Length: 330
Image (cartoon, rainbow, N blue to C red):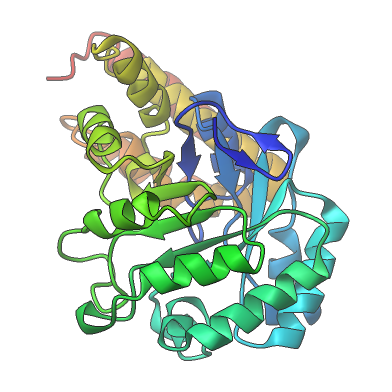
């Protein structure tokens, strides 16, 4: 069973990836309910943390029912990374994760996220700064390299392990690919098969079904899988994968009531955490994902994204449950 510091994970754990504007406490709670073994916060700017920026500080919120949970930070300045690690340490998550994988331009331009892939020496210095700033286990999420001509994940893995990193999650694309094209897990398998590597290696990228999860587990020999976009609107994916790996059979598809319950709980927990108004507004982007592909749903979706009070939204959910009581998914 994979171990990160004192955290003992189940055999072949399923991790929820840190996703900006997605993996907040309400969404993490849903994913935990449906089988996620280890979860991470949205990534937090080290500069924002040391400036005491409200949005960054809010992302430090973690709850005992989520554990084990990691807080992920990013940045390109050693002092800021060390100081932010000290701040993270005060809220005592189970681990601190460093983002060296985000391909988004506004992050890369600051010499952070995947931007660090062009300068492995800087990556090592930043990681050492975080390790110095915390008593918690430090893990890293990164990509294969900057582009196809500079895939350097083998060197990165060895050097990170040598300075004390305790687990590595690898998104099987380069920064140049962003989220397009095919992910190439053969590079992750090579890292895992390196006899020098003893820390857990988790694979990430394009896992969107139970079959693919089992196939990649067997084919690439990784210690676990990190799931990102496939969990959006589909928190059931974790238990679906676990059930398929255990039995070779598929769990029944989530019913309409399952979808309504998930969306409703997500909304309630969002309001609890963010306040009613903001919770309602920020939940609007999620409804499409929960009710994807359902016939003649446009009217209800429109009402869900334009209703401003919680009682009104609960009545719409009740109406959806009544109208779609006999709905069968194909």
